[in-house]
Image 1: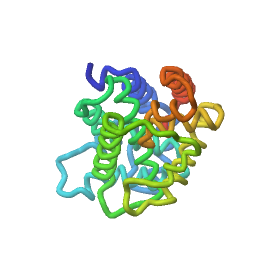
Image 2: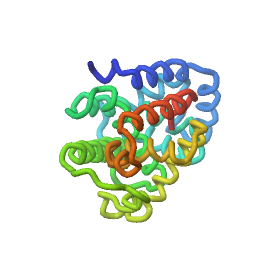
Image 3: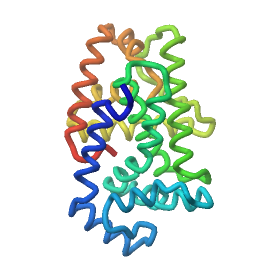
Image 4: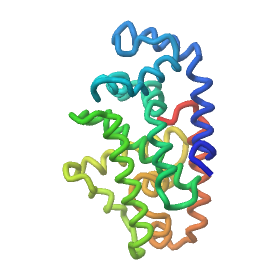
Length: 242
């Protein structure tokens, strides 16, 4: 099975088809375009075609639409959702290229990680082109998670303090704060308790395996996977995943 055939990617693509030509996005694009010519498009498909062009002379030109979306995404969830669609081809490429977990699990991990990386791009703009940054950092984090799942011994996770460290040299405590933001988002989006939201964030974007959490809590890993699946289904009920 390819990435495009997974349930999550099909849902994202179906959601985009409804959103791209919707009056909601059209009205928003008119507002955005009046304020920022980089976002002056008639509909979502026109924006997406421009954002995914590769016949350009520089990364800056290639990423100008994505950059403009990320500049708004901190206060506009719709801009964040459109940004996710812009980078989705790279996300699907990662899902197809990584050989770990079954494809549905892989899709969920890669998408969740990409959403976290996009959120970091919103919070901390950098000199690197955002499309490259999203692809490279998502790939690195997912591959690191795959290696950990395969080779690390099980450890007890009592207070989740391990989330205060990161594989990014310049992150430290700020990474824990970002994980906290993701937990809050899942709680609000899915209307679930903090422990359920933390389970999703830790195991999808935090380099913590279900097995590690299961050992720490003294429960069956299968039980945790089913619990996580229920939370994710609740989160996906809304129109925006960012």
